[in-house]
Length: 136
Image (tube, rainbow, N blue to C red; front, side, top):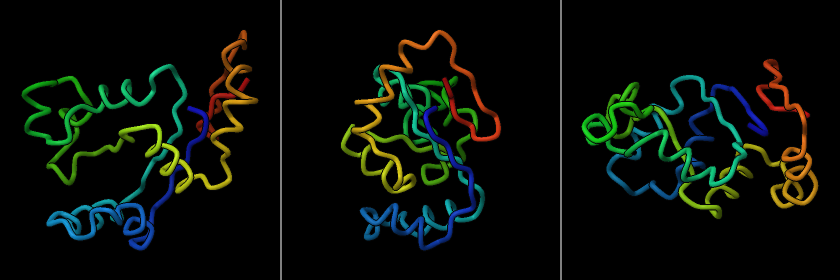
């Protein structure tokens, strides 16, 4: 993890994040659930991070996840399709937008130019439990 945040989001923040789903039948269930408790958001760094994470979380539909991938996160803790416990960006473009939404001070392109190589070459990387970030 490059960056992390743990917080209780407002309904307004969740509405903004899921604006693209506003007209869908599940929208109210989704935003009500996500604003009901603490969120943990992270920027992950690794080769093929998006596909790796999406493989770990499993199918969006919990029933499908339980039958097709019983070891995935959604199989183990998901309750329903709108309460499936976890989100993952589906593309680099979406990841950039979502990173900017939760971490507006984070500079995506700058990280690749200046920090990624340092992280790859580091002999030791430590996990800081207070900030939930890996540090060189």
